[in-house]
Amino acid sequence: MGPIFQLIYLSRAKDSLSHSDIDQILESSRKRNLENQVTGILMFKDGFFLQVLEGPEVQVFETLSRIVKDRRHHHVQVQVECLSNVRTFEKWQMAFFDGDLRVSTEIDEQLQKIFKIASGAVYDEKESLVQHLKCFRGNVPKQCVKS
Ligand code: FAD
Image 1 (cartoon, protein in one colour):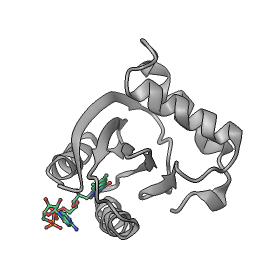
Image 2 (cartoon, rainbow, N blue to C red):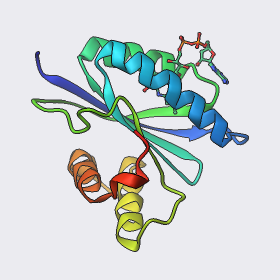
Image 3 (cartoon, rainbow, N blue to C red):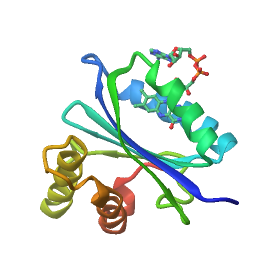
Image 4 (cartoon, rainbow, N blue to C red):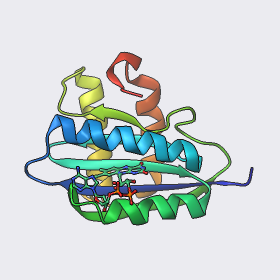
């Protein structure tokens, strides 16, 4: 397999988004992503989504083109696009982390930093976003991530 294309975007969830909306999103995402060799994680915090999509470039962009049309969120803004030799979220067809759960101070701080960097609030740190996500994946208790 060639290099892995990674894309990270931030979006605003629709106001009336429910837990069952998220469950439906995850169910269809996992099915489609398995077919498309796409892996990643979806995080939700304070009404925002942050999603990492990784896989073959064509499939990642096809997936993104469906995602941007979805009315369950809006203002989809791609923050990072890069190539990598390895997947960060290998085996996760689309993991989900609810950032509104208070798991631990350390995890909360890491997550806040990730969303801050992605939103551009921390100047010039976007290159470190993948690194922060890797750290988060290593630290978050497995039982707190739905995959
Ligand atoms: P269909 O299932 O045929 O739906 C037709 C249209 O209706 C699409 O525009 C769809 O977006 C929209 N839609 C479907 N269900 C609802 C609903 N309950 N309420 C409102 N609109 C609806 N898909 C992936 O394949 N991989 C992902 O990783 C992925 N991540 C996502 C992350 C977020 C935050 C969101 C909001 C959606 C995500 N999706 C993902 C879902 C994606 O947007 C599409 O809904 C899905 O891929 C099916 O696409 P489709 O063209 O077959 O649409």
